[in-house]
Length: 307
Ligand SMILES: [Mg+2]
Image (tube, rainbow, N blue to C red):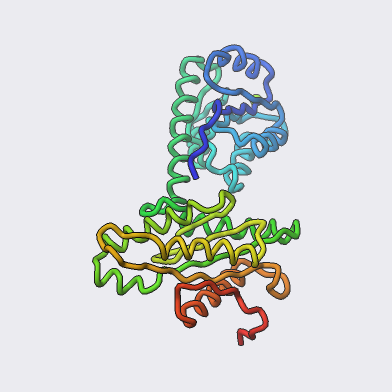
């Protein structure tokens, strides 16, 4: 859940001049960075994928694939498009500078460059990159509960579904919904409702370390359980259910708040299942839990026709 503290930032230099690499190695050796380099554009792109550098220094004039083409390749790759690129060029015409910036480069340094200036520009790009990373992480966390949000849930579940199918590993999805939440909000006010959601999030976070609880939306939570069969998930969900039922509420003594759970185990669903099928199955199990009296756990009934 917590942001990983990063080691030294990585800088990747792609330039066909041996001299430039030597210069960078010598002049950047005392900077708090990890310097990598390639003299071949295509290899540089491979290294970018392997290393996920924090900044790329990119030469424009190179044999074969030039800097503009490398930049385009970087910008069209979702895993690489956010890495800031600083262009370095010997023939820095105004036209080249404008084109580089238009293509998404963050900065432009003319050769021969002052190392002091280059260092300052690298530091500046690293600061920006750090903020971008923080914002990207923040964009995946739910503000109220601190759980992963829907955006993260969707992405992670589709990853886990692919992994599960590829490696034939168990995967179970649990959907959880607070019972009578609307009534609770009406009776006790929204601040109380918010507190309930926060407490529930804490309970869901206090489970097994491998469970991935997310806020799916409103009062609904989605918990991804990698490497977990449906029968194990039944026990896990029931522990959560009991913990919620037993929670005491400071401003509402004696109040019992409950939640219902629906479970879908990917391995018992017929055929090759996608993310949407898994969510739909867990949702219909959740619906069944509501129909059968709430405060209970139901598993998707695979024999039941959905037609
Ligand atoms: Mg060159």
